[in-house]
Length: 265
Image (cartoon, rainbow, N blue to C red; front, side, top):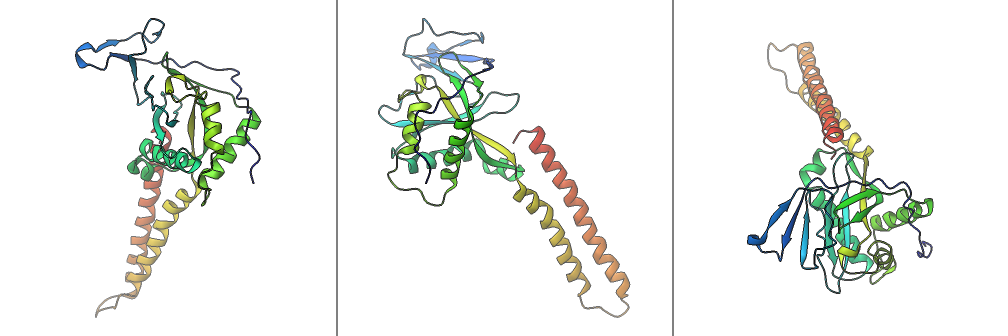
């Protein structure tokens, strides 16, 4: 059983600020009042609560409220781009509901074509700092104790059974990530989905063509011979076909690896 979670200090040493490239301010959410601001150093000191920031690349809305509902912000950070984020309410208010929303967010951020073509999978959770009022995000250096806590969180997320009604993790997230508020404008951190190379995907995409080529080769060799067929020629043709399949699969695997690496999927 996991130890009690509480009082975790999230270290913010060596925070590197990442400013937004472009923001759009919408006043009262009316199209006729919409105007764009290209200043990445935009501050909101004189902007009222009725104003709303819309960040590029699916970032979280600044004062999008869920009234009394708890919420969770989930994102994926690439090495050279701003995070792609999803902010979802937790309707049930327990750990089960939170994990369902994390799962939903992961599939929304990585649709099935991206998951299919990627040789990476979600291997853990991280944290990055959010500044909704000024519109930028920052990586954080985590304390080892916090890393251990995130490992426990990911283990429970992957578990086959979660106790219904449990609120250990959702309370921790609300206190440490959302500053105890239901207003994302007051949020401090977002949960980051960590992507790593997936050994099962490599094995699947590597072994499937080899097994398929063996099956086709054996099937072709056992095909009934007709008059005039030479067995040696049939064997040579069968394994030539198999070698073509393996060669094409090797090229395909290399293309998938390149797409995964350079496309950051």
